[in-house]
Image (cartoon, rainbow, N blue to C red; front, top):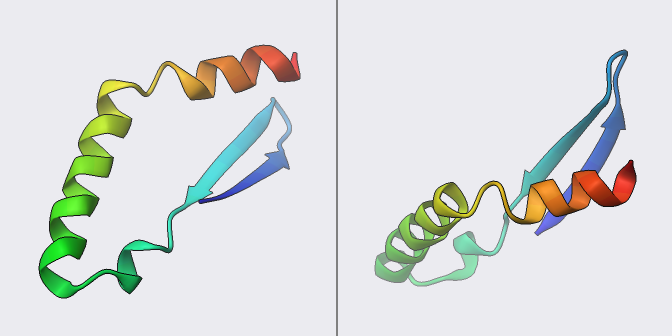
Length: 56
């Protein structure tokens, strides 16, 4: 995972880039990517909210 923080006029933009999926076998890449996205959607308020609180 690569995280980039960019200052904007009204706050900060967090960009997250996952590049490890491409290194998985074809069948595994799709399954792992789906699991990752499902977990991220389910827990979206956790880590980003904690990061936001730390940066304030």
